[in-house]
Image (cartoon, rainbow, N blue to C red):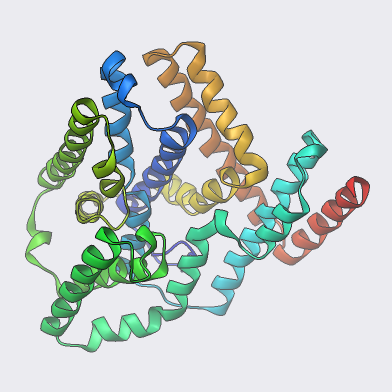
Length: 354
């Protein structure tokens, strides 16, 4: 299974994980990215809240890695139509973001931001990295399917050793802190290997995977919290919250295997998960991001305690639901006609602003 959406019968455990992972992305963006990380002063004056936010960040930081593991587990089967549909989807939501922002407040419009998105710029880094992974996936599939298991295990050992030393510790080697196709390749091969050749790590129960996932999260939270409380620094925290951190990769794998063990089917979950990418594409659009962040901050500030957290969480669920609904409407339209119509609208908006 992959984000581009090859049509296969899918167990709903993994599809549920896709939705949960996307909720985790929203939680990440609503936590440190919106409020900032807890400071040394805050962890002393508001200890419970600060540690809770640190725990939440480590709990959710696995989301991106989980998506790549899912793709590796099911294997990407490249098709021109699939990748074309993905690109159309990205362009569609980029243009929609411009139209919405210009309709609300024309001062938010920027020609630079529009051009940045039309070439799939930095805000959509995940999509760019995934498309590159999609392109090289046939080679990766052949390697895992036809090479001897011992060779693959040695390759994985060398790859992750290199990533942990040069990428994670020293920020070199093209890994980009996990924000890169290079990091995706390692995760993809790992999941593909486990699916085809198996391994001792697959024999445990869902309870074991859940406990291991929570244990890893607790360990990372404890390290960061103690360091911040005693030494007033978050140097280690920066390393632990990197996508290519060994602990984050292990946590991602444990969470993935937890849901992989869940064998059930729900047409509703599967239908919702097929539009999960739209949640990311819509809320991270720079023309919409400000409204997303403002909503989180406003709801939390109504009552900056557990009630405020609940309001913010419900807000994220509403955002998810709206994005999925929008995507279902989009899918009812003919992609090219849809783009032409939206293109005409945005051009008229641009003409009036310029």
